[in-house]
Length: 481
Image (cartoon, rainbow, N blue to C red; front, side, top):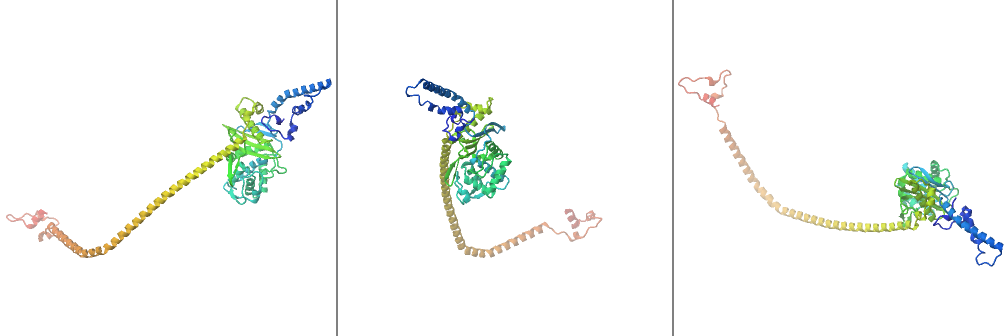
């Protein structure tokens, strides 16, 4: 049973939830009226005095009973429905009215992004696709990315705008690009929902603005976000982004756990009047990732505190000790789960200012470096021009000098040519003469007898001269040879 008035730190509850309060609280709320005649009243008769004492005793009894109801209420969350999943084991560790139909509001955008990423994976679209913003997308109301009609941006930019700004305009632009038109895209969304087993969900548009017949449940939202993270874990880069700036307008991520809860890195918030404040959130610590869904909180503060309370109880339960999440919810103190919602936005803007300063400083540094480089380039260019001019001048001077000396050189060459030819001829004659002398000295001619062919059987060297006669010159020649 939901006990709206007993969770610490919450504002007054809406009238439509009064019927859910326990009888003890209703009696407690009316007790002061019954006592109004007691203090300062005139002397009353015995029965009247007894009646007053009886009412006072009843009021005291109600006050004593109130803490019991307060403790009981802490075992549930102050939201219409909720679920908590341990994604590491696949075990649901908490659920509360998980099948109550509730409008999804902007949680619808998780399904829209899922369908778009499916088309990218199938090769039918690309994150780099350029999308032109239509009039319909531009004029879509509610939360916006502040697109301008006719501007172009990438599909990747639109998905980021859907996740961070919760841009309804970005949702329509994405639907038109992926589905050809919004109606076709909504059909794709509902087909995907059926494929994921979302039996109690119907979607009428790609952004979650109020529409007749559009509803979901915490169980179906858990199934959607579980499959979405399993298929596209990289999509968390969209959902963990704290702010974006488009067309000079800054929009921040409304997920209250970002920057406030250790390990929080997504997913999506949503609100319409009929649903209240919805949130899907995922938190990872160590090897454990929890996925929480809360629907129908009455205020942003209640949504933030209750989801944080659920997550903290979940991690304590997973850590061991044998206590259930419900038991741990009752044990938790407000200090264990209270959040400062202003911190999230202030940190985002502080980060933005820091980034802006860094960007400005970087631009200034880049500009200074560029100016320095330009100055160096100009100096180098001047030096190069001077060198070229000097080289050109030197070349021109050499050309003039050559032009002046050319006739004299030609004349000298012309006069030197006969002398050189004559000297060359004389040198050649002397060289021929020397060769002839050397040849004559090397070759001494033999006697005529030596020219005759020798006998094939006997050599003239075998002939012995007669006694008292000198050897013929031929023989001498033969011996010398």
